[in-house]
Length: 353
View 1 (cartoon, rainbow, N blue to C red):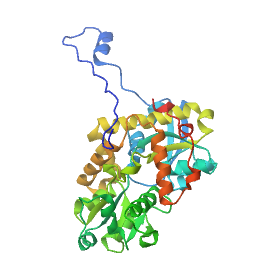
View 2: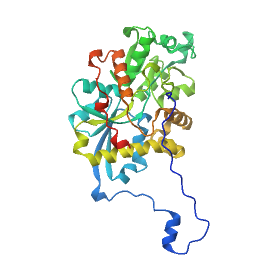
View 3: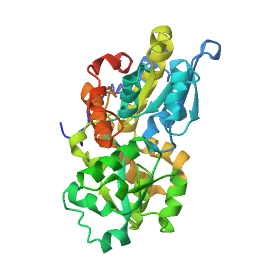
């Protein structure tokens, strides 16, 4: 399977309507089908807390599950907080948050250090982080977008590139691509910035580029001010593809103690992933509700870039976590001897089914 292929479940076949008039209310109900699902009784709702590490479309499943009422129909009230970067995972480790989205390198590093976390779902199975540089800098360097990644990456030398922070998946991808291009670590300066900050800095030419996913990568690609150096939608860097990127995790002890909450929460994420694939217009409407200031073309391009990276069902595979470790090792954030011996032991796909 190539990085652009998507694993899908077979869609259910809708029953055809009856061709005659039914005379009784009971038969009319049969003809019309069951009433739509409604939210569970508030008195029986369970509670869960989720942290996301950034505000971007990598977490579209969260927005869908909230806005479309999927969790509520499961009987779950979910409180969502944005806790920047690694802080989201640290909140799970401390017990102040039940679930968090992170990346494969985060969960494998934590387990290598004795912080027992478990992967419950992978909603994006590529890095979801592309590297973009200013077009004027690329043109001056005679950048060839058709060249191999090791050649394209040479344009990074001497530039300041914005990332989401040290040891984040953005930082990891940048370091690995620079390494493949033969660039020393000190020849690329990283600047931890939030998207609103790096977009402004990019436009003001205060930085040479940034690492990000949708919708921010699409903004500068579509307006022509930036060029793509490393393209996550093509699985780049391909030697580490697939890799768990938007990965849902919790403490290893949480689901055994709160099985019902885990089942409802993860099932809601799985239903949201399927929704994205099967309901384009409705998904775009949710995107517009949260990211409408970026314009329809950016959101449409973001949607198309996400689909090939979103597996249905959103299971986590040992290979995705192994590649996460390999990325971490290549970036210098994990020692080779700390690579996990058994990736299946930190994966629980039970609730995605």
